Amino acid sequence: MSDHDDFLAWVRTALYEAELALHNGNAAPRRALWSRNEPVSVLGAWRNASGQLEIDELFSALARSFSDCTSYAFELRTYDVVGDLAYTVGFEHTSVSVDGQPRTYTLRATQVYRREGGEWRVVHRHGDTVTE
Image 1: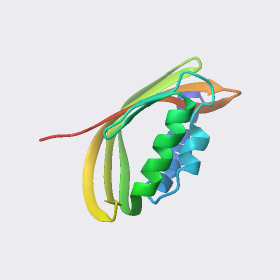
Image 2: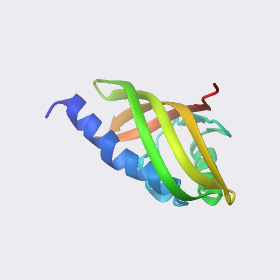
Image 3: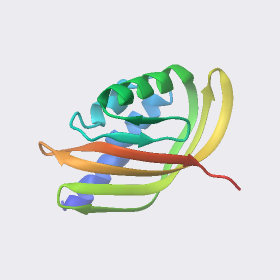
Image 4: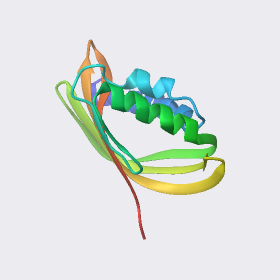
């Protein structure tokens, strides 16, 4: 398998499963896929974070807010792998309860990844709400 194939398989399995878990109130799988090396950052649809402490606080807050995910799909638009760096660009289509209220929304999501110790780790996320 090529680097591109390996990366894409990881996105479609481990990364997808971690995002699904977060939307069901469990941040641990997402956090496990994020780098523990600086820099790390999020420019989020609801909140921004920079550095390990802020990332941990953000993911915990999201997990407390999310529950009862009935649908999560990542529509990958483009991606690339160059050495030990990669990125994805796509749309996240989600139906979930946020603070107990059912919501359906789509986010534009761009993520940057770094290969560390042979494993892909997320180092940056930018997400914003798609408006009509």
